[in-house]
Amino acid sequence: MNAPQRPGSFRYAASLLHRRWFASSCAVLLAMLVLASVFADELASERPIICSIGGHVHVLSNVSDASALAGLTRAQFEKEHGPGDWAVWPLVACSAKEACDAPLLAPFAKAAHPLGTDGVGRDVLARLVFGTRSALLVAGIAVAAFVVLGTALGAMAGFFGGGIDFVVGRVIETLSAFPVPLLALVVQALAPHSGVWSLVAVIAALRWTEVARLVRAEVLSLSSLDYVSAARALGASPLRVLYRHVLPLTLSPIVVAAVLGLGQIVLLESALDFLRVGLPASIPTWGEMLSESRDHFTAWWLLLLPGSLVFASVTSTNAIGETLRDALDPRART
Image 1: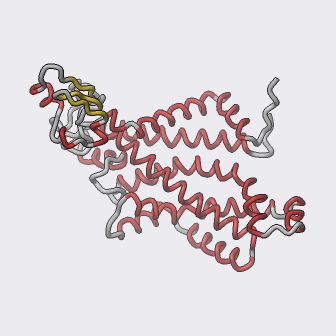
Image 2: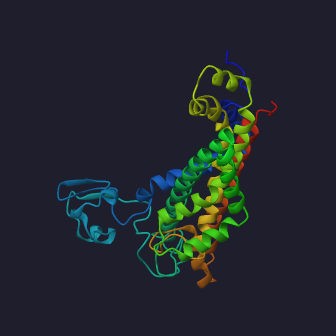
């Protein structure tokens, strides 16, 4: 017989997530977006996933960039392939960066472009898929960076106090006084070379304060517990007490903050790309597609499709984060 699930545990969080149909649906949707970003090259690429040409088999040529297939397109293959040659093509045999057909084709106007093309003839589905990769990659790296930075500084400020707490507290108050999107916009606009890493650095430098404030409060409340005083009395060093006895109990709120932060970073990254100060124009993003819709008012799919993905990803992470917060709260009720 299974032991009862205890509120505040990750097992209880998984159970609660399963019982809430909306949160579980959001988890499935978010998992599908992650899979689409991981297998973007197998969903949209101008090169075959696997092919046999002249007796030579090429596997994942859309990723490995085989020199033997340089310049190969689906139309060229179908025109020039010999007997015994075969290929398995992605769902969309088009590049997300280069024009492959007439501009502003509406969805379902051509079977080769199920979601149409943009203003320069690039396939919309291919750009959505690779935009998913861009959004989740930036969000994942940025969340990992500001969670690590915020946890480290917040834990040191709450545990050691004194001058460290004073300096960290003043920095948190200073950065919190300014809107994060405005600061990110100014820094990105002034950066000489904006890219993935510059955007991640800007977001991490501005968002760590939220995690630091949360961790500091948790560490302050945990440092006065009896088992922490006992560990100090037994001669454990301050860093060991912090690492082994205090920080593990702050994991739950950190996980909740990280999940909620994913959606917020996706929204921030899309907003910066919409204003064309985010990622370079050569990288497909949802925000850049939304920005392009301003130049083509009749192309409703350029607004609706990427906007729906931004909305779905933000809603999914918020629903999952709220469920985790309810489950991992020590005061939760069954």
